[in-house]
Each structure stands twice: as C-alpha cells, then as structure tokens.
Length: 304
Image 1 (cartoon, helix red, strand yellow):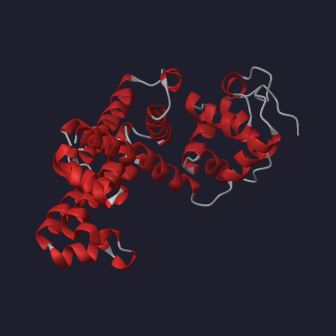
Image 2 (spheres, one colour; image 1 turned 30 degrees about the horizontal axis):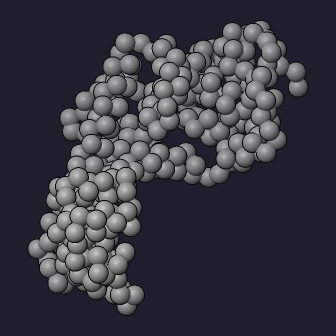
C-alpha cells in the first residue's frame, strides 16, 4: 500500500492502520496506549493532536509532520537498529503493558520514598528484635515484631498505610486521571483526555531524566490551551505533593540511628561498640546512600 499526502490528518491516521497492517483502529489505540474512542474521534474530526502524532512516530515510525501536515517523507527519519525496532514492536503487543507503565513509572518516581520505607523497617526490626534479625531462622520479621512490640508495630503500620495509599493514588493518577480518588479534585476533570493523561505520564518521566527531556516535554505540550495546561499542572502538583508526603513518612530523624546501628552490627558485631560515635551527619549520610556501612564503620572507629 502507498500512503497518500492528501486528505485530513484523520484520513492519514486511518491509512496508517492498513499501512502498518494493524488490522483495526482498536489495535492502533492499543499500540499508542489510548482509548479506541480517541482514535475514532480523531478520524471523525479529521484532526489529531501533536502529542498523538508524536506517539505514532515513536511507536510506528510514521513521521509526525506527515500525519499533521502531509509533508513528506512519510517514514520518520530515525536510524534505529533492527534490534531496537523488534523490541519496540514486541512491547506494543504485550498485554497489560499500558497498565504496567504507570505502575513502573510510579515505582521509579517514588524510589526515595521506597528506600526510606525499607530503611525504616530495618530500623524497627533492629530496635525490637536486635541481633536476632540476622539469624537465618528468624523467618517473618513483621510477624515477630508484632508479637514482641505491638505498639511500635502499630505506629509503623499507620505510617506504612499512608505511604502505600499515596503510592497507589499516584499510580492510579498516571494510569487515568479519572481514576483518582482526590477529594476535592484540584483540577478540571472535563479538561482531561487521553493526550493530557499521556502528557502527565511524560512529565513524570522527564523528572527522572535531565533538562533535555524536560525541554522536549515543554515543546511537545506548548500547543495546549490555557485550560488544559492548568488542569495538567494541577494534577502534576497533586502527584508531587503525594510523593513528598510519602518521602516524609519515614525519615532518619526518627529511624536513622536504629538503622545505622543495625547496619553496623551486620557489618561487624563488634562495630556496635562504636555506635556512640554516630553523629546526625554520619547517620544521614548512610541513610541517603552517600556512604556504605563499611565506610561508616571506618569513620566512627577513627573517632573512638
């Protein structure tokens, strides 16, 4: 099949279905990670957004400029290896990928909060169970902690519940803003569509990269109306607040010393004799991964 330049952007989008042998408009929607309704609407109106055109280019190698304006060349001029092309096409065929993406994106975006929670749990285990936590026969830490000190376990569980709720809410938000449980909703829900949902995901993705990605995101969303931009930024701000809250549930000011003592003991049981030399600065350095337990041990031994 030879693609034609004439017609509307919707006509060209429809032609891509046959050209790439996708079989149906629904299959195209699945590849792009949008609803079938978004594809049908674009074709019916004869217009597609720049975001959708860029998605087609990224997923199927069809030039965004051709889709939007009919300007040749039709094939995107990107030199991709055959290996990369294969993996890109296989990814589009994985069932449930569209749901896995926001979940994975949230996990990476919440990495600081995740690490804080893991450190806090190790700190709690050391505080309640002591050296027993390093016995291979210990089994389930959580069950043992609850049996030995239900009060501390309850306090930790409440914090964990808040952290987990925030994580799940952001995951829902990145999957589909309409699924958010925000009350009240701080953005205009009617402004959100598949393209704006995608823009929210890519904004978070840009956070994980560098300024070049953020500049690209800014360029790709410059076409948004003031109303849509306001809704997008409100949803992004809401997600940022949830992440910040999750990060602050478990902090070294509360759990850091116990975490450091446990890590020192794991490094060398005799290291605990030097725990009195721990400072706020050294505890924070360990907590935030700037030094290893071995390096911390060397530091406090020099002091003592």
